[in-house]
Length: 434
Image 1 (cartoon, helix red, strand yellow):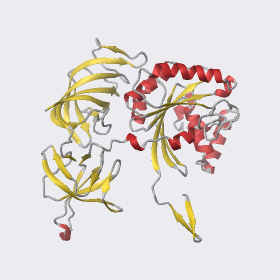
Image 2: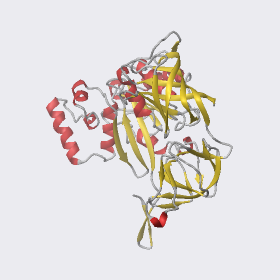
Image 3: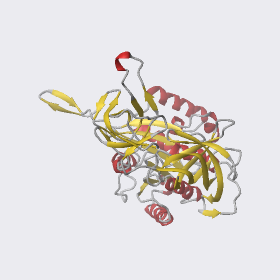
Image 4: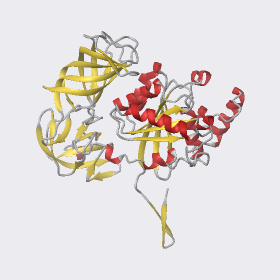
């Protein structure tokens, strides 16, 4: 951890490092797992025994080189087929930031896995094979990233070593992708030419591409500005648990625990508890490490209120005159995750923040073709890994925001009641006020 020398003593900077969540995407064999392995290796995040294991397995497979993809492709089926199937999460840190990288599958068969891994990402990292250029899967992954409203998109054009480090190849792919991405709701795109296998422009700048004057991938990830991406305006605090100590000395204590979804909570703020509409003020904000004067996302805290009001799990603490819409009918985009198809009339449980209700699929408006962005309005069902727009009717009102305004309170999952399986992930497009 960085420090400064003062009078012979080292003062440690106690400020926590910023956490950045990165989701990778790309076609099969574009080099996602190799890139993550290279990031871990070149940033000195690989333990000696891990490296020895990878070296041994590489020799056994006859790879002819140290296959860094083995650091992330952990399943036997992934190693045998040379593809990523499940989402692999890898943590590493530098002096500037902490990172959680989700290595998500590239194959269309595993769209649900990609949506799961990318749902909380700050940055989407799309890999393109320089030899193949922009292909259907490249466009598809960028479309899903825009659908999930990931704020920053990095397009890493990989395997530049296999096209002789040709600037013209990089410029052609950049122009083609940028032209297509103009149709999407993406505001920040960065293009970086790399060789994941050799490490060029991954952690250190490449000597093979003097024509490229931009940053290396790691430098960009360390400096991309994500603080302003979080919604600090709409205060939303879903109550997860009511804390009532059994100690006689604290019989009057009543705290409300949860994670700040958005906005800033401050001691003394006037707030309203929804759905009851009761007004009160924040008396204190507590954490395991001590009290705070304010809390912001994604902190998990316990809030104490000045008045003795009725607050339960599933309620939401908000600002006066800035509350989510209580609604029993919502329009949403969903990614279907079950082998049993979704059909109009289907009944499920919907889990939204800390609240649960019953949901009926009132209407399937259309199914997306994520390759062409065509809307099939004649579709009568959604199959595994398909994405579509639906209208849901709920048994009880939920406190919702549009996903484009608030990713935390604008998202939900659908659960099959009989099996308790999660069958869909959804993003709210709009809601009718109850």
